[in-house]
Image (cartoon, rainbow, N blue to C red; front, side, top):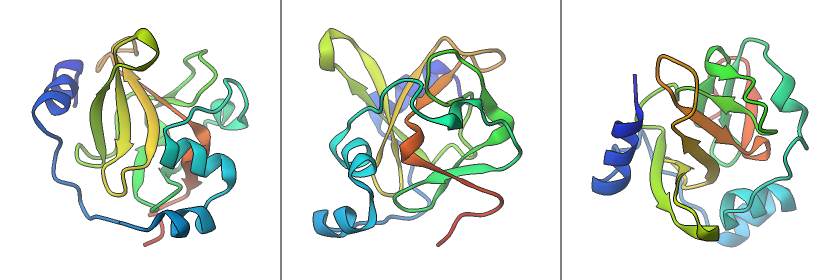
Length: 152
C-alpha cells in the first residue's frame, strides 16, 4: 500500500516504470477527446467541482484513463470526500500513476498523471481515510468507468 512518503519519493527521485507507453500527436488527442477531456488531460485543466455525477456513483467496477484505457482505480478504493471530485485511496497498481510536484496557484501539491500516456488526472493529498491516508482527487472527465479490464 502506497503512503504519502512513497509519493513524495516518486515525485522527487523518479516515478515507477509504466506498464506500457502510449504516445499520440496533439491532433490525434484532439480528434479522440471531447474539448473538456482534452483541456483537462492534455492542458492540465480542472473541471468544475460537483459537475459530474461520478462523485456519487459507488457501484463495483474499475476506472480507466479516458485517453489510453489503462485501468487506474478500483471502485473498492473510492470514497465520498465531499470535495466535488471523485476520490480514491489507492491506484490498482503502483506503476499506473506518476507523481509531480505542482507549485502553481501559490501552493504546493502533488499532481497525478497517467503513467502510460501522461494525461493529467488531478492531484493527491495526505488527508484521506486510513489506512493509507491518501486522497486521490481526480477529474471525472479524465476517467471512464469500466466493468472489467479496460480496452487496449
